[in-house]
Length: 150
Image 1: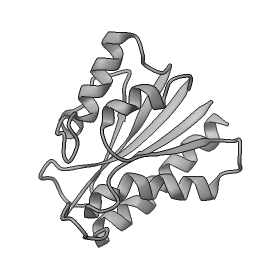
Image 2: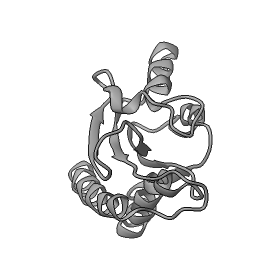
Image 3: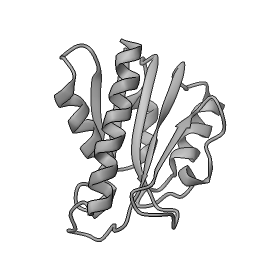
Image 4: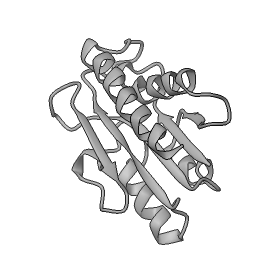
């Protein structure tokens, strides 16, 4: 099974970027081709969400002080870079969860994904123009990868 997980909070501005990518992937793929999940809340839930999936792609907003709308890509076969070590609005960072999964033997066979640098994480804000553009870019990149995997 190929699984795409969008992570975020729909009420915190650019933190919803991962959710927006997940929704676009769901709309652009055929049922049964790719499973798409949206994760709102604690990233530790990833350990259960990706159980049984061989190929997993994760998309989340990041806040590193970089250029808003910047896109970072990772493959968990390698250590996740600093962009994925900040917990943002979550208790644990994506890098923390990946390392915990690795230690517990709960890693999918293939885990990769994208981080989108957010501009605003204010309660009640909508996606910034930079995040909207990055969502479209990441969706395009991810669809190309998914088509190669299917």
